[in-house]
Image (cartoon, rainbow, N blue to C red; front, side, top):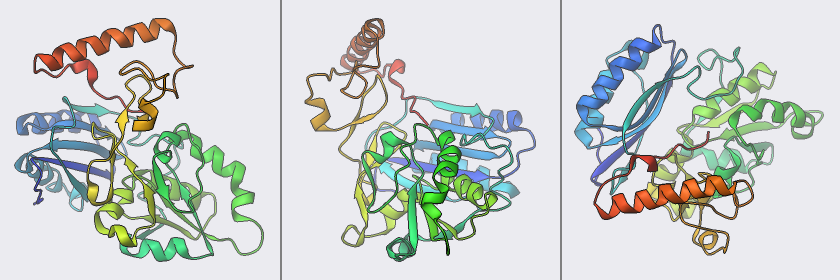
Length: 316
């Protein structure tokens, strides 16, 4: 059972496991989530499940008890945090080809992955001069925070990681004794695949942060932390800080990039329409559509309603 002091419990979970009939599991979980009053997104694919959901504690516990009753999810691990307001607008259980898209069909994280490193042991590993550390997240995520000394591949999407590594392998690993490779992501799921990919490429000393950045920020005291900045999350909180407290960033509802107070001070920023980062990426027609959406959201907010068009569709 979870223990949360905030009114809303947020649960991030994933599990790589063979799913015999994804459509049947999707329908089953949609029913359980709807009956419990949960909101969020849950992905179901032949390789497993992945999602973030929110609701009161009893609703979260109902779903977890249902999942853990299945042998393939008996050891399901979940990362919990709290929110003062519901961070999602609706509940969606979706079918996908992959629960995190890498586009490498021969990679199987249930067969071979890197070595897990607990948050408590992570600092020692990444402080070792014989270790290189790679942030496997997307560029808009690394822009708001990362570990000190991490290599940023500047990925537009996770699908770009294999090509990036192959292109940079010689520079990263060099000649002679190869360094240890430590990788991390938000919750651990991308590292399951990225470490499996490196193992398939013949890299032996591969490690990843168990539970991801979220577990690290939850368990490692701020005065001992090597994390710098905030951590982007795929819900209305946008970012979290140490202790998983809600961060200081908002979201540009045109491009879905995180924006700071300084970003909003830019003359190119317009609430709900554009930020400096996407100013040159949108047409006048798109901007007018965004303005109309923003007007509808403001109208709904004044009426005390949630405008469904405001639901986040974050980039992966």
